[in-house]
Length: 292
Picture 1 (cartoon, rainbow, N blue to C red):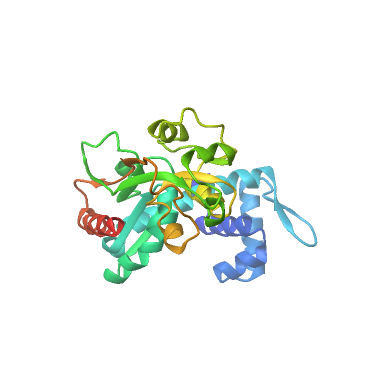
Picture 2 (spheres, one colour; picture 1 turned 120 degrees about the vertical axis):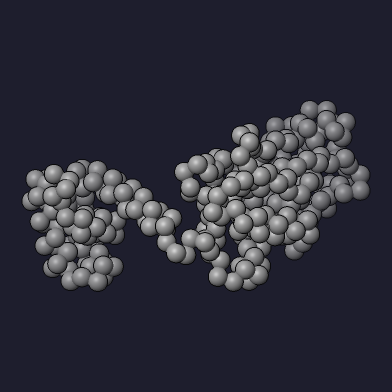
């Protein structure tokens, strides 16, 4: 049946289902609303199922329509990726996978500098805590939290050493005279951080820390909570660079504590491949940026 199903009708269905409106689909595809309605009716007749429930005011997907939308969306996304991979502009496209907090706190604010210095280059960024799979050709560069495990075919660049210390708002810092004062104030935990409050308390001879008052699964959320006065976050100065510069966050014990130091983030890209040259340019640029 698939080879007899018009691809144009599937495309019209996908647009109408995604937008929830025949009229909106018509505008997106530069068709008349009647043409959209006619195409979808023809598709329903061809498939032998109703894809939409129609009322006088709106349309909604049936169960069969929901199923078809899921598969149609995936198919069109794969098609888009295939066209992108063979297009003539691919040489100027850099696809970056990045740890979420690094993407929000470090990469995004600096990216305009890279684009200005490399006219004509397009950068696409996807953020998640997973490692990028270069074998499927979806990414050219990966910025990861923690050293990559499978690195035989990769060039791995350790980024700047990170200082991890208690950070809080200037107002809260006025109530902190020494590290021992931390036990009387809310502590914020970053769930995925390799260095936790227990590590910092042990490094400063303070014994076990109190239970955190709140926790977040992303460092940028913990930093924002601390900047808003909700408590004290144990976080990286690299990730908190903007907040430390603009004064939203301060290090209350800079002169009388021992902070943890480690290399938290790494940049990796394949040793071979069509985008190796552009990936190397990006790597050189980023290492220079995060040193500052």
